[in-house]
Length: 102
Image (cartoon, rainbow, N blue to C red):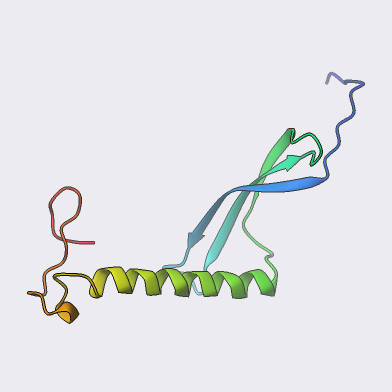
């Protein structure tokens, strides 16, 4: 190991990526990838990930986020033109490759 005389001040955490697996699990599984940083300089000194031991507050907010995302999906998929509720023919909108689906 090589040591340095420079000061390494880690006093903050920045979330870089969130991943949620909500299908098939009794509870949504949340994984966060993060960086350890010096808040004054913005320098990053390391990274990590965490996928357990979330607080009840985080679990409640995650449930709200999932419900909001699902509501947005329902709105865009079932209230748009060509959907059964919009008086269309009941066909799914085409995807980017032209195949009917989500």
